[in-house]
Length: 319
Length: 319
Image 1 (cartoon, chains in turn yellow, brown):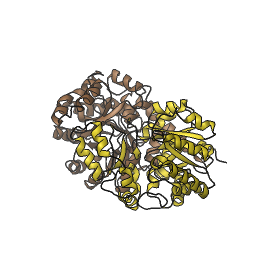
Image 2: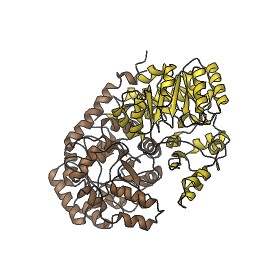
Image 3: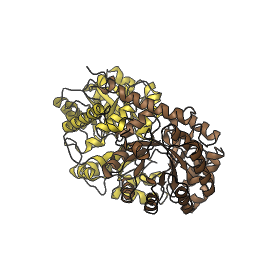
Image 4: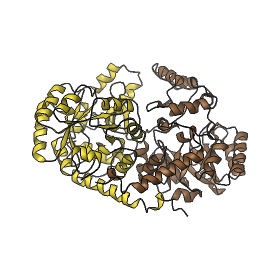
């Protein structure tokens, strides 16, 4: 029996959580990750209520292991999503992008484990005070929506560990066994990886987007649209248009109008690499091949254990 | 005899390098770090040529261990600084903020080891092609001047390791034994710490600034002035004025005029916490007490070795 706090909390083999990502993480990815010993998450932010219910049912049919649903708390039909996860007995819910005081108590009363995603010590303290079972602390390098503090994983993890007592999951820039080990040495009990699973075989991201992730280099992403909700994306044509717009000192309304509706779907799900919004983390530069979820988890654990066992004899660590 | 590449290259005991910082790292700090087994660096960016020579001579009188001088390549009297380090037989030079092709060859001909500081894979490749002996890769979380790519230490280190063959020193967010170990697991051969040594007893930073560092919390720094040279600083009154100025869509000239001359000296050396520019990294949130350089190095190595030896039996790492 594992003594790792995150493995114990979720009843999973490895403390590796696949992030709930819009347009990428439906039941196929979530069940594949859970079947491989991690925790798969259905990303409900891009799903209508009936689609979410369908994904939960299909996920239940595809794995007998624990899985979770990510619910962005600013989702317009949030009540319906909350009802779905309760009705369909989803064992774990990750909440993000909103106030954890609104739903945590109700979910916990239904014996659902609740984890909240934060990007600062301030929000970690708030989440803990709301009674969450664990916290995801997500650094500036992470893809998709992000915090305003711009604190990186390297700095955020030690700060959050010092501030709270609940188990901590690190996110942002974690992509393989060595970054997983590094994050855990910094104080995390487990890790969450989003970018790593975008170009996974079972991800529902469009093939064009997956291919773009494989080619991404260091410096190819940027955190922008801070006046709306900060979001890290590929520096594609749409991003360059946003950069041009910023030169005109735009109002928040102009930025919102430029973003428009459906841009993330257009890029990530429909494969329009020019006009779409392509949410991805800095660590995309390190992904060069599409693997199955099972292969990814195996590679991570194998590298993690390899470094751990070699460290006491490795030349560079001994002086 | 150590087999760590950085310890071997510099003939030092521990692969811990104290960053050359304007207004903080004169001969007192550099010699104290070198005497404690790390590599101390004199930060010449804030020194007139005669002051640098005085600092080099005093450093030589205070330690028989290797030490270095950091030379920002955009320094106006760079020829005089280069002449000083050659004439006074400084064994190691760290260059930063400029083109490494200009001086590397000349310094190497004088048997001086040359290390260049970069913030991206692109500049790491360039530095390597210029023949440097090692590279410092500095992440977005680092204090002071920084790159435009905003790549964090967690992502930059693996990317640079994959791109170059020369020994690699990680910088940005590294503050103690656990972050040092994390950076080395990510691929670095050694670490450079700036922020950690600002509030060191031997640092020449003003006491007011040191006290501010001790009180700093997560989120208290920001990277700004990207149109001039990106710089991470405390969010003090001067920073807030810059934020206000940005709301007016200022020209580069207006930003330069706001910055003015001598602001870093005013804040960091003279202790004006309101009007001064206070350069510091995100990891300042983790510093709570002033220690001597010797105590800091001892704490780092003790924590580093402690985690390393406990890892194979620690509950959380075994599953």
